[in-house]
Image (cartoon, rainbow, N blue to C red; front, side):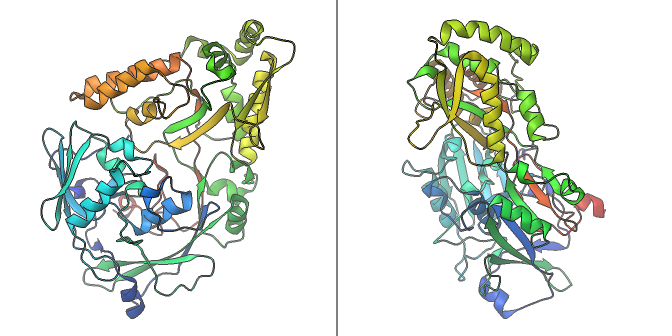
Length: 504
């Protein structure tokens, strides 16, 4: 998992040394006026149907192209480097109080596009707006321990917490907490004043080099549906494709050597599994949910999707999260799939009544990977007397898929996504534990409460886990700076540079 800065942490201790390189935001007008020697533009395609934009996270969930855009042109107080480690963003350094209840950030000297100086008051106003009740920011709940965000001076901002949150920086680095003012950000890239790449957004970053000419990085960022993005990569029209999921993975012809070596999988944590889509209907019965859960052949599904190092999961929480509580797999998980199906089929006769199959509808995204998932589930559940169909076209869903990457290493995100008011079916006892955990001052107690909440959700079979989410990229040659990471966040700066440890 990620290392968090401790007390009085200095950012230089945890990101690659800058030594002679000082990264600073620029304004588009400066690019147009001054053109130091730069490199050829890097063509990057994000898989998605919407064009990249500097979206306001207050408005609701962000598309993959918008997330990529915000990551690169609207940095937060901190940001992720290529390996998913925290590095300075708009804040040049920060300190954490001994009790973990105060994070003080000192802002770097920066300007909004147009020349207006960035102030701590600007930053506090933007972040507070994202946390208001009216905000639809999908990660708003993860900052529930934040009591105040205040400007202390023009360049110093404090985030005050009611209880310690060691993963706060991981959350603030997410594009959902990008600092956007009037549709603009502070970098590290800036949108070019002159857009000379049809169908793409041209962006530029100036890298200040002491005692030498500045270096300029150019990126052309576009979006495309998965098939078109893969074709562009094969044809040499895209050097990097980001944003792949399980749904579109089978479109990559991995029989071709060039593409087989180009596919990179991020080792993400998160949720990939099924939840009841409504509180009524057949799945209101725990015994039926339990039968469905036990008979999913997770190994066969993973083999069909052909994702290296992906392992089956039978619990909501996964190993390695904050607090170190490793969930225990249920006893049935040790049995071979065929043996589980035989036992479940016998039990199903008492649950699935009538001579006609019980019809269940599942909501899944489009794509060949989703088709594989549907066929596997239909095959696994048919012996139970269940007919699985796709939801849509007037057919309401009984089940829906959750496919989300965890924004931090905290178990709280995993359980709170299944709380009452968010999930169609929930456990009030688990909710009570989540509420107590949010107020707990002692980390080990908080972790124990969240682990118990996860166990109760597993016991009630409110989530049918399958594995970790699948996130993939196509990476061309000449991009040694690309790295897989647990958040699947890929900044576009320094991709042509070798990682610092290789340079030393």
